[in-house]
Amino acid sequence: GKGGYPFYMLKEINEQPAVMRKLVQHYFNGDQPQVDEKLLADLKNADHIYIVGAGTSYHAGLVGARLFEKMAKIPTTAHISSEFAYEHPLLSKKPFFIFLTQSGETADSREVLVHVNEQHWPSLTITNVDKSTLSREATYTMLLDAGPEIAVASTKGYTAQIAVEAILAKALGEYLNYDEAKNFDLKNQLGSIANGMQSIIDSKDDFQALASHYLSQPRNAFYIGRGIDWSVSLEAALKLKEISYVQAEGFASGELKHGTIALIEKGTPVIAIITQDRTAGLTRSNLEETQARGSNALTIVARHLAKEDDTVVIPDCDPLLTPLLSVIPAQLLAYYTSLGKGLDVDKPRNLAKSVTVQ
Ligand code: M6R
Image (cartoon, rainbow, N blue to C red; front, side, top):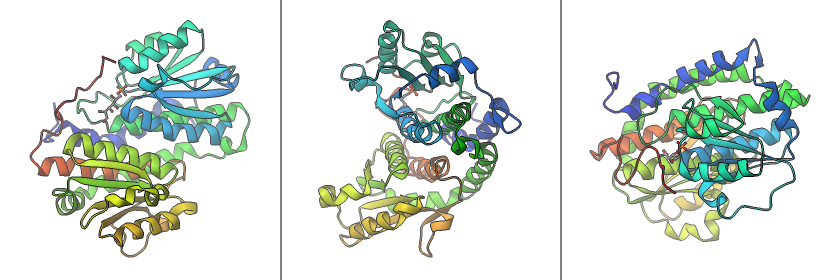
């Protein structure tokens, strides 16, 4: 059941700290991540990692690509499964495929796996459902331990996928003997991130107020960011679109002035995600450019970069793991916007939980 929550989505948002702790228990022995050695050997042999997923899982793959490149120094790219199945880039000589699929049943992703198996390329499915189709058909499986996700809008699936990608990236980097991976204090990070998630969730009333003030009326909205914050912007916008029917775009903030800023009108909500030292100032100026055209500017900012009038301040963590925290306010904003409009949060129109047609 919903455990006293009005909707599964809110229950599942609330479960995220516990999922982080469960993943630590499952995958760590002391401070060392425990991952199948054969999987690590196959990954070590790869000259390129292709991450394949749809929707939220694709967005988690964008974050994962950064983790693999930083920790294991293997070129890694994330791909939309429905595109990759029919129009893929020229592949490297020794590819390794990672399928991200919460349900393990997404037809677009399976279509890619069928081709991968025909070529006898090694693959891993990261999924929430043991023995699901993509789990059975891939060479390896890693489980998300997130418990059933019922709401159509994925929340704990996204954060669990990123955490498992981080665990694998660290394990692989250590296997390859890289200092970046050895010094990546992932176990402690995941523990404090669980607490950080909880503190954001505890202030959910603030998000209800923000949602009703800024997002209940407008037809469109923007999430903007750079780098990893852009990746989260895509996920944040998808959440808002799918359950509250606000036409939202996740945008690379530097691209706005190359065309899209023409859409900014008086009252258009623009929410900037700012967690990275190198790009914080740039994203802030892009946000100011929209304000000069009348936008309602909101910010989701990592504590060490926060200024007095920032809207939402989130706890600090390792710069590669910020999506685990910065996505939580976006999930809550989408939830309360949908709730405030009286919509069926868990079962938005036109959508199914698992998409088993191409
Ligand atoms: O089960 P999967 O992870 O393969 O599902 C992929 C997408 O269909 C899914 O993430 C979808 O985008 C969600 N509704 C997003 O909230």
